[in-house]
Length: 211
Image (cartoon, rainbow, N blue to C red; front, top):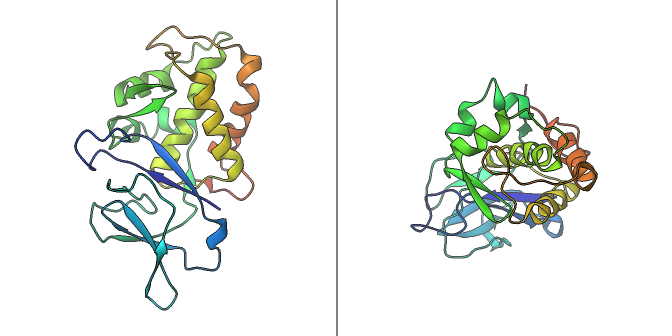
């Protein structure tokens, strides 16, 4: 199981990792209670008997991690149960749940090496003028996937790898309509397909679509 942790803006002031999604492979801890407690950036497992377990493999240590499963208010010792959560599609965030884009706690997300504000992310999701530009269609699915993670959806190893690959592929390109970057659809289609399947709630072992 891959656990996704979302770093919100309420960690150390100006934290470089705000708006980023981090992944931790929990498969080695399958015998432990899937409950995590946060303590100033360090996450610990809670054993079935209620005692404190070993430190979970989260980074960066020393920053507050905003654990999103389920979404909880900021507390130094807050605890939350890991659940699969659920996903929305690009259309869901574009139309019925647009406020989740405009009010994303971090103020934006990283796509490649560039940070996009909530308003810019919304402009990307609202942009239907793909016109053979794989960067736009890839950004649609990547932004949607990272929003889903930010709101509690868990990723499978395949989806986690697809997100990492998508970020690397985008690199320094600036996504339209914010910029004029371009990628050939043939370079992005396989990653898009994985992310689209996840966003539609059909990833094997992943969360279902929000009802």
